[in-house]
Amino acid sequence: MSGTLTYTAATTCEILRGGKAYFDKYLQVIEQSQKCLHLQVYIFNNDKTGKMVRKALIRAARRGVKVHLVLDGIGSGHLSRKFLRKFEEAGIEVRFFSKIRPGIPFRMGRRLHQKLLVADYSRAIVGGINIADRYTGMDQQVPWLDYAVYVEGPVCIRLHNLAVKILNKRNFKKGWRKDLQHIQDDDSLVSVRVLENDFYRNKLQIRRAYLRAMRNAQHSLVFFASYFLPGFKMLRLMKNAAKRGVEVRVLLLRKSDVMFYPKAVKYFYGRLLRAGIRLYEYPHEVMHAKVAAMDGQWCTIGSYNLNDLSDLLSIELNIEITDPAVAGPFQQELLSVIENECEEVPAEAYMHAPAYKRLLWRMHYFFMLLMLKLTYWLTDKNSSYQLE
Image (tube, rainbow, N blue to C red; front, side):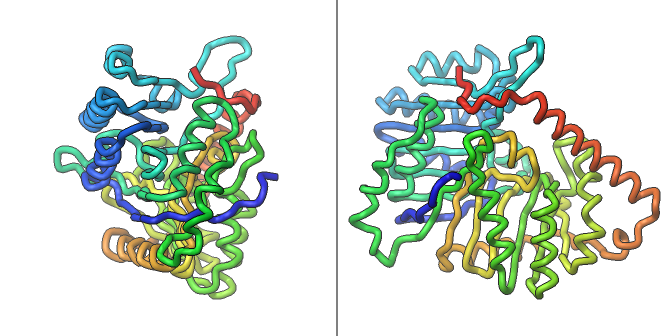
């Protein structure tokens, strides 16, 4: 068991949509850092956005900030020595999480899929947004649809300690609880929880939060699910919520950066529509968001996808918010995106689809399932973090 989770406090909690304004905030956190800065991300590209963030990190290091950068060995493994050398010349520590190492038998490690920026124990950004032009929307391109949350206050101590845990391969300290005591009765604070998913360390906190929301929802559930391949239990709870009268809306991708995914997802359309769940697709660009909201009272934002890859093979990080003053407007934002930017999936096209289409979707689904199982088989089951 992962232990009892307690709610932490945030003095500021602002949900951000990807695009230029998001990266303006991201750079502001870096520019305002004074002592220490941790950045841990899956993809860090050598493009305009990546170079912009690199310059900000180098400026921070040159004014005396201790900068720690942890990149995933697959997502950012393409970066050249020339690109990385500028970090090193500025005194920035760059480490890669679980690089691919050829050998017999071939094995690879878990993926560092979380996206975390935390500065001076006091300001942080957590979400699903990587560092790449496609999330900024460069040259008039529509940015990929995604979200993150900016927080200030005691919760950032917890996030700092999580970053240190990965960097130093050890469990975080518990001191953040003591820092919280003197302000936890302040009604102006936002109640949040830091949730992790790390199967090999027996942490499935984000998955359990999703299942709990599906069980407890009374009026409405909204999911933006970018790589949607749920297991049987999650699918059953989602359908049960709809059958007991909860209005369930799910936004799924139409375009994808992963081959076979769009058709594999359609394998679920008929059964979801028959259960009374309303489905939508985002037609403009890739829908990369991994967020959910319930009854205007609860929401979660982060890197966790509703599939086995996030459950079994990746290190994920979400922020759960139970303050209606934040969760309510965010749910309205999600509904506004659905109504104004998306297209509803027509039920007839999938509930009574021709047999050859159903067979095609089934083949794509089982191919993706096979790839996930193969990836799991090739993954090193060592629970230690693999940093270099």
